[in-house]
Image 1 (cartoon, rainbow, N blue to C red):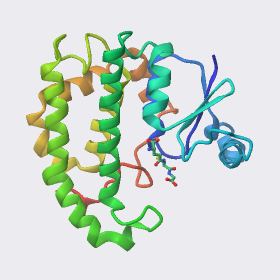
Image 2: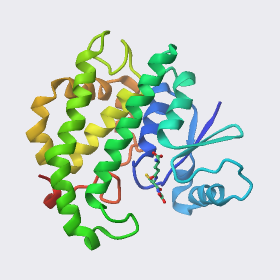
Image 3: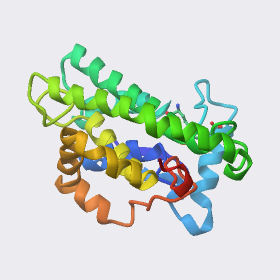
Image 4: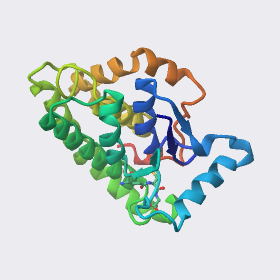
Length: 242
Ligand SMILES: N[C@@H](CCC(=O)N[C@@H](CS)C(=O)NCC(=O)O)C(=O)O
């Protein structure tokens, strides 16, 4: 199966959670909007599909994935779909649901990280909501982020199969996503993360374990891995960092 990934071509964003899963599995995929990037042809193909009146199950927003004739949207849903064929989720249904639950909680955390710089409206510039962003990020770095990190650290600690992975004794797509979240948080909130990270040794170790995987390591060094930047979900504004 050759998968087609549709996502904005200049940011990691939520598309990165899908890219990491496809890369870890060595899957055959095309990053459609990044194809012939300079000509804009890939982007045009993505917009065509997004605006198509022919789709009975259209996606609301990127990322979305085309697998044969099927078009699947919502990051956590795409990963739920890809987990079994890519070997990135357990066979047992209860465990699979647990991985999905963690992925949804990661999505909540990502949404809240986004809202630190866009607390009022995605359609407004950061500079138009700076005051609210300051208040929102103070709460995020002071209360919400530690609450999320406490939770994920406890999940690792309580995993009956050991603290190496979030679920069971092998890597799942939730581990890949957790790696991405920690990398994104370090980019966006370096001061806060430097202050907090000592309290989360299992999460830090999980990040490093994922980064050291053969295919992920090669991907991170490749041109396919875009750099974090301030058009992305994780943005670095010094004044919002704790
Ligand atoms: N819940 C969705 C959110 C999708 C989303 O917010 N996509 C962003 C880019 S990361 C977008 O293009 N949004 C356009 C919009 O919401 O109008 C998911 O997890 O996939």
